[in-house]
Length: 513
Ligand SMILES: Nc1ncnc2c1ncn2[C@@H]1O[C@H](COP(=O)(O)OP(=O)(O)O)[C@@H](O)[C@H]1O
Ligand SMILES: O=P(O)(O)OC[C@H]1O[C@](O)(COP(=O)(O)O)[C@@H](O)[C@@H]1O
Ligand SMILES: [Mg+2]
Image (cartoon, rainbow, N blue to C red; front, side, top):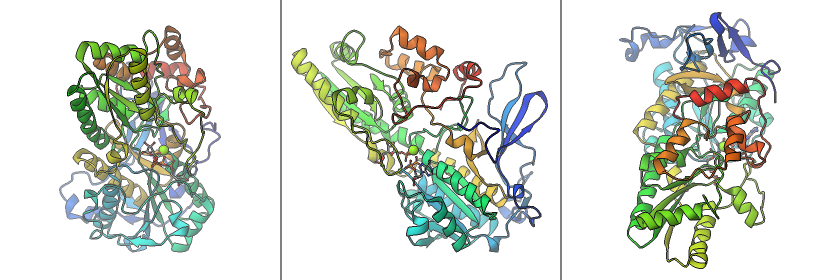
């Protein structure tokens, strides 16, 4: 892995008492003597009562908010928001928006708010929608987006622009950007998309183009990492709250089914290829779940402390149970039973075997053949229903903040950045921080302990596992040390420095997500 000093476009500013600013690239880094313009917001009636129109050039947001008396001030990110000087005149802006990867509630809200924000705040009226993801740059027509055409789209699920996996061809994409005279590119997508955005930015910079490339992080799985020394930076991604809310309906149905019959078991599969955040938060929110299984925490079926034993205990005590399983959980167990296919989708993501169906069948077989018990198991797979709905109110507000922030950043000449919420403040984060690793539930962290104490389920960890997890250099990826790779079977790359520090800080991190 590239270190910070080897990376291009790394802008680190050091200050007193261990203050560090991880700054984002700006046009002026590679295009000197650009003309600037006064920000039209100062004449905008919406801002007329705001005491301070513009973000102070020195405003930064700390990544770490729990500090000790003598600890250094640590890493900061540039605060998002309108700047006094901007690098585009309204008539010169030719913006485009693209959505890539899997669906996520809130995509249309982000599109709407970029179009409305850039139009109402900056007077820009040329915004193109790129259809069907990255490949749309060179293989599809574009659509014109206006505040009128996007007015109601936040009420619909999905993305009005369409999306896709695969098809990222940096050269063809940047050729298309140049040919169309586009000078602001807004890219909405997950971890793969942000990697693609970073490649586009590098190529744009190499060609010396005055084109702002800005990302808006999207992931229903909450697996966009933005890790600094193993501490999560972005609080959460949009659509996540909606997904957790919608998952409650499936869990509730499973609970009703399970409580209505003798020895009822409700199994609900939720999305989460590599990260079990939706399953974890849906479980914590619901209180009807007796067991939550996620990719980060290994489990086993047979014997003492195993899943079968726990299911039997719950049935004997309560007469029913509800089990939530994230789609990436237990893949090592299925692979032992079935010939692993090792297939990938067009973007290179591993195609998973269906844990929900497999586990349901295993439980049925166990109780009928080995325990001679009659059970009634109902399996619910609401995964695509959850991500196809429009976003709920809190996510809509969040999408608006992300969209307006990203527009302010691009107008101010920042580029190669993703907008993100850090400790409740909107910030600009350099691409390389978003693309380094995936975000995972840290099972040595307090949040997973909270879940275990809420469901009262076994941890399924042996004392050897616990020791390994606690002593792992990287608490997020400890399973890889024991040969169980979370990230699609690929070896996980570790950051070697600061790992001891990370052990301490991650455990103390109060961040919910
Ligand atoms: N390492 C990469 N470099 C460039 N583009 C990538 C990379 N990984 C994924 N992409 C592109 O990003 C898009 C979305 O990626 P995908 O993994 O499907 O979804 P998501 O961004 O939601 O994780 C696809 O068009 C894919 O080709
Ligand atoms: O849309 P597909 O190709 O069926 O893939 C399903 C995957 O998409 C997701 O919903 C979102 O994944 P991305 O954020 O990587 O696009 C995952 O939870 C799920 O594993
Ligand atoms: Mg992804």
